[in-house]
Image (cartoon, rainbow, N blue to C red):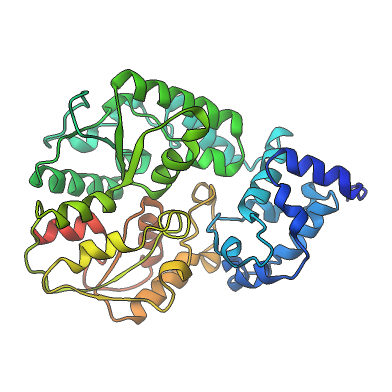
Length: 379
């Protein structure tokens, strides 16, 4: 039974306390609804959902858990409504009341208790590096490589971690990892709205960084990159954070990596948390364009207009029916360019595209690759 409409001021005060104060700027123009990718795969009205929240009917909308925090709506809002913050505030209100989808609840619980969303043992975190020249971080090293959960435990993304290590070693980069001491950065917990869990993970990680004397971090995942760079500062962290494609672009510029010829036609997908959230568009392309013989073709929606894969905002830990997967649409766009390889640089994007590609017959089993994997093929 639908609860009674609450006074507007009372609701807005509660939303504001959770960080969604910009909702008061919304004048219901509906541009966000026309921008949101969910509108292309199902009946979805973001404007209506926001109005329900303004009326105090937060609990009545399961759509609050749909948002992948891709930021497309934020960038187009004429009133400057920070819709991700607004939706985050709603989620925090629901999580605080114990209302959180079960699959996301399990993932967050595993992050806190086991250090990764799958709940795998910490002692298996370095299995991906068996046989590789990977050292544990020491104070005199230039970089801490924060591997992240997916590249540590997921078989497909482990290949990305291996490729990156090979490239960094070829370039003579001084780096190390935390090994079994590394824990989840907490990105998904924050996007889901569990601030208590997120704070627990941040405090543990910040303490470990200080203990190890870490000053500079290179992250494989854009979500880790964003979280360490933008969220950890709230907890006193002042580290220099770069994404692995930024470091690779720098190494190419400095002549420490000299790619050989690779005759391939590729297209590049901009991950939301690298592109729209942090403005990193050029470095991944610079790496690809440095490879002789490689032809980079752009999809119709690229850079600021890139279509979300659907994995952000904690969505990766929920089940999405096939006909509602953004990654299916994005893969079709990539195929439409005639490219032989779809390149990205995000673990969630990579896995979502791999999953979408299972129903597509293709000759090249390496059709979907990370930037580091393409680069290592040319060295």
